[in-house]
Amino acid sequence: GPSDYKSTVGECCPMCNIGSVVYHDCTGDFSTTCIPCSPGTFMSEPNGLYQCFPCRQCAESQGLYIQSKCTTVRDTVCDVLDGYRTKASDTECVDCASGFYSPSGLNCTKWTDCAARNEIQAEDGSPVKDVTCEQKPKEIYGLVDLIAASLAEFYRSLFSEVQKANNGNLNTGHLTSSIILSSHILKSWQQFVETTMPLINFNFRFLF
Image (tube, rainbow, N blue to C red; front, side, top):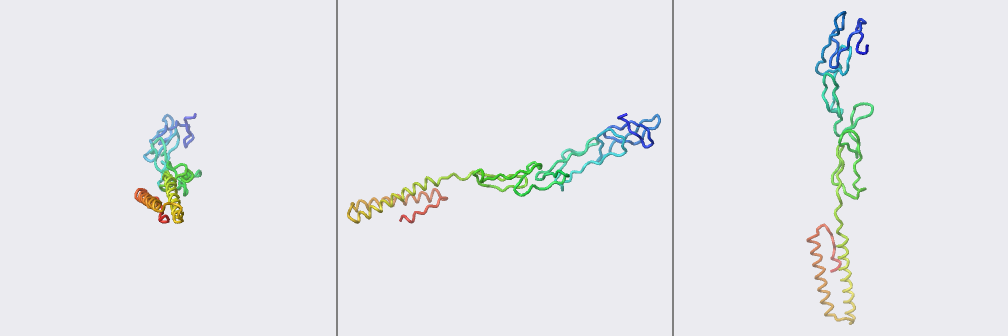
């Protein structure tokens, strides 16, 4: 029947249960004698075999580790170490290609393109970790540039008025006082920028 096996002498003998193999075949009135699998071997199904199967080895050099240890009724279960991926043809594992990563060790994913997200790359990636992106520094230059340009234009206008005053069109003394005051304002603005915003490089020298 389905639970029997044929012995070496051609007799139908009862199979051994999982976790064991045949020690002696059945003979006449004596049934099959079975023996448990020894450590490092297993048998996962009823059988008429005389030797247990050797447990599988999970070689770390191939990027594998033991997920579940071998028992007398079940083979070792191996899994893939982080940073490796398995080939379809066998269990050999290799690093992800440059620019890719795999946190679980199964599928390689391309590193995030920070520039495509309008961000900057803060940390490099690795075979097991994605690159780290962060937001660009807030743009504060536009407003400051606008104010600086306005002040520069104001000073140029005053300078133009000086030229007119030299031709006798305006009160030179009053206009000169205004220019001196404006110069102090511009110098105070430059000092504010230099002391509070060291990352912003403004050059006001052309105004003085």
